[in-house]
Amino acid sequence: MFSIFSGTARVSRAFWFGVVLLIVPIVFCLTHLTQIISTTDVAKLRMQAQVARVVIAALIGVYLFYVTKGLFKAAHRNRSPGLWGGAAVLITGSLTFVSAHFAYDPWAYKRLITDNLSRIPPSAALLAEVTHVQASLPRPMSKSVQIQSAELRKRELVFLVDAKGKVADTRVKAIEDKMWQTLTVDHSYCAELRAAFDQGLWTAVYEFRYEDAVFFARLGPKQCAAVAPHQDLIVKKRL
Image (cartoon, rainbow, N blue to C red; front, side, top):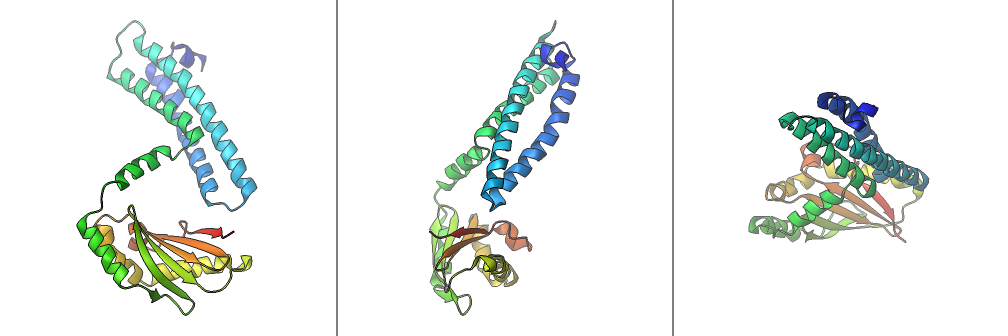
């Protein structure tokens, strides 16, 4: 391992044994921690996963920084670096930056890209499809639930849904399941959005507003293409 840091190891050995074989399990680990952070309702578990993600990403960033230096030395030792040596240094250096940034905010680049894309004005065809959907509102989803309105926010179509009654903690899971079943089993919801998805709509967000809770359910092309588990359904208690 010291030879990798010092630059005395071969470039291929340093890259495959010092980078690839280590990065693969680390990526799975960080992905799992990020999934826990975004899905768990247990505050303590979320905090522990956040701390673990920051520590692991920071350590791997420091490690890859020194490996990058070692690869640079190895690629330039008594020669000019070839295509393979230059690619190994570039890839490892990029991973160093990504790992360091992952410790801070793993989704910053995704948000930056989507924010810039969302600033592109929607097409006339998409606006026409949104207007067509809005014209059918308000309409009931059930006896106690009614869609009041829909608003295009960037590339998301947000439906405001009024629901009667309060939500006891013991009923949250049952309401989630019923809500998701309504949106996916009844194909009319996906059918009315299909043309909008074709014209560039990213997501349809249904905001179910109960007296003491708010539920958010997202429908996208993926969810409408096949029945998917409601991993995109988020529950927030209204203060």
